[in-house]
Image (cartoon, rainbow, N blue to C red; front, side):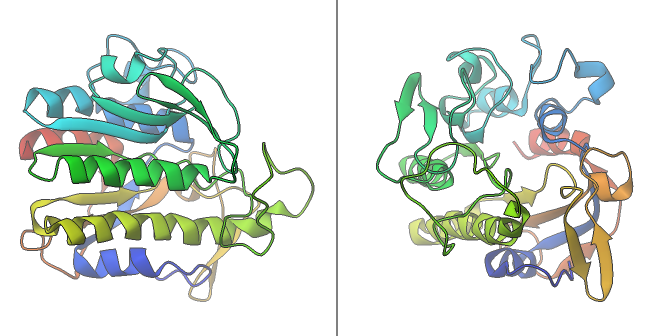
Length: 281
């Protein structure tokens, strides 16, 4: 999108391969964004309380499963519902952080995987585990059809990644101290790297042209972060209902179906995803 503060070669290539939307909007905070994305409803129609998904809600997981797709979710949950919650909302398989607890999510994370509580203690990195789960799910279902929802654990709170000089494989829990905002660049780069792993898996399995890949963000950047769009300074607006709180990147890539290098400036918000997926299914 013209940003010059971060190195995201995999996302740049994804944008070149497909359709880049310049006017996509989420909610200004991550959890209501994901509820809105999953249900296709504005939050005044689906909100119970923060961190809760209405047990009566219909999600895009339900819709894709009913259409014959094998479904999966990996990454961040934060919506309660217990160990059966993901299946209740239409996902056959899951690998999630903050399903029934809130342990470390980065070095040596605690995750819930298909009904089991799994604690890692040998320097594993939570985002790597979630990405590997998505890639393995794709491999198992390469004959299709499959639907994978990947709400990343990255990129906050800001901590060193395995590609950072300060990476500590023995750490556990949230990094303490001042100056940690400097790791935002590292985490954005790692986000891009994880997307690249998924694309590479689709290529390796020979199903890239049979798979629609959608990438977006769930809120504006943290308020203490300033990013550059060329020579324009953009202050983060997470938590605010202003453009810098809701304006997010969005890329749709589907070789052979979505022409490469296209740009769309029409207004898109997170209620548009569910009906679009339903039409495609």
